[in-house]
Image (cartoon, rainbow, N blue to C red; front, side):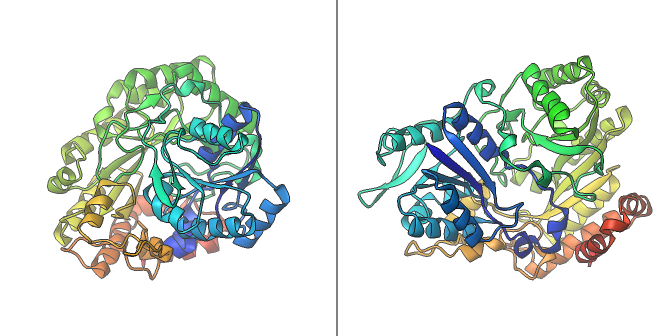
Length: 485
């Protein structure tokens, strides 16, 4: 079959304002994994990244007509959920013979609404590589009865149906590398200034990859691989992909997209040993957790080229950490950050959330104070967003405290999803939810205050100023003004 997979357009400026200038253009790896599996199975596969190409809805529909696929698949994020809704309806109206399949967390949470409002023919839940192959097999047989396909939703005889069978992939080693050759690599590189410590290179590219799926933690604000245990490829397989990115894609920096790269110390040590054994030369970064680092691990990662590490710290208030099931303490955070700084040259970033359930202004100020007390290179201060798929989202929606974008009669109001933004202070939008102990205006002001307090200290201000260059100065000055004021 001729398969077209689409990373849809997304108006990030409507969601996060000039904060979009700091966003890295990342290959749509989820789609590229699905593309690789479909191609390996013998299908003819095309990938359209409408986001990085800045295509309009009309551009996308026109290109679909030119490619004339047998099926269209689209990934769906909250920020572009409304665009996918409109685009799916347009495709089905103009090309009713072409089934539209949606995937990713946003599509899974709103599957019934998307299907009943005519935005798609099928929704894939969970990991899509081999579920999608079964969808293609069904379509190839001339059928649209997906009753035997695991982890999909569809409409049958006017009734919403969700198949519950598990579609999780246990052996990630059998999944082929993402089909990166199906997208134009000129679109993907690290910007000169971004929200990570690595500054980029004019000679070599920045790339992204996964070595695992799932996370052992159960933070209530997170949607990533919810309720799924972590599965990982072995060290040799992980470094095979790194070596391929270095040799074939000129990668000088690779960010590990794993929800928690350091969860298994033995495997990380093996990866570090394998990088050194092959004498690979590249810098890399990852997200970590304060409970999973020690001096031995940090020294090994440093020796293997680790450049930066981000800890999800969230808050400096124990009561708030406990409420979101973070399973950490401020003392553990301080010890972990100190461990990295004492045993390596790895640059450490802290990720904080303001406006957690029950948070007061005093709590927010304590989190800001705590952030500034740590020897961090960078910090991000997000506003809590009850993203669809998280425990907090379901709790608030069940209590009627959040606008989900779905009306009582089942109609979708996708414009609501633009308010699901962790950087709402960059825009005129109101946050989708604010804890009752803070107002929206207070929360937006606290986000800017946090950034000013952290980055207006001499050492941090000078370090960030050094990252600027004349070629990006106007954009970054505007971004900085919107960030701090």
